[in-house]
Amino acid sequence: MNHADRPDEPLIAPHVVQHPGPIVLALAGGGCSPRIYGQVAAPGRALHEVDWMRGVGPFTPPAVARRLAGALSQRTAPTVLLGHSLGGVIALLAALARPSAVQALVISNTGPHTRDHGDNSLPERIRHQWTPQTRRAFLQACFAHEPPAALMRELERYLGELPAEALLEAVEGLRRIDLSHGLGALRCPVLVAHGELDRRRGVADAQRLAELIPGAELVLLPGGHTPMVDCAGAYNEALDTFLARHLRATQP
Image (cartoon, rainbow, N blue to C red; front, side, top):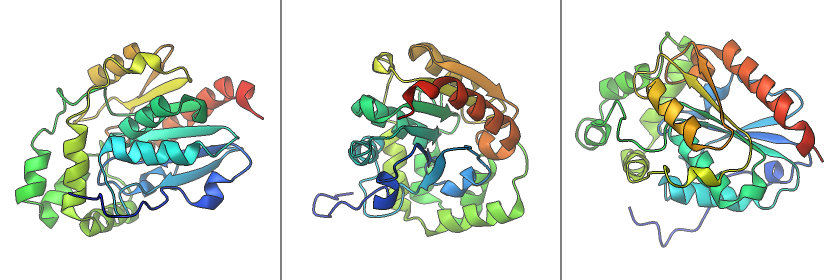
């Protein structure tokens, strides 16, 4: 897709960027509604879902990360990024681009590259067979347990309204990325909170990611590709423990 002639739209609302206190920004995976973070709690910090797949694009992870990093550069209070799947890669790229703007990262169910990805046929399905049935199967594979019915309806609505070419751009962009040699530059605290029942990203992906990031913590959770839904209680506990341990020193 050619977005060169399209104006940039703010990825984060101005009132969020200007919030004087610590905030948590949550980025879902490609094609997933940000409402997957609806059960996530971050006491004492304002949590905002970032709907990065809306707007004019571009939707490749590097392009989204540049817009995110640019917005965060205007903040003076602590910012934490939660990234799920492809959203996790965007969060990592933003932290690498603007190290001073990101105080901590919580990354779930992704990896430094896609060579071992469990769904390598996804781009072809989006191109040639992106039917309601195919989209539902894609979403069902995001969970180890049946998600709440209301959330599943929202996920199906959101994915059905997304232009297939935008999702394809994001997914193909992800497959061109290998962060193996760049993650060593991260200096903020990082938690890899990985659903160990994931059918797309195995535990080996999480272990590899944690090994490449200096000081990263790895927590395996009893969920699938979307642990903030599958096991929200365990995810929130890991998040709260991590933030309490690492963010005291960064408070203004």
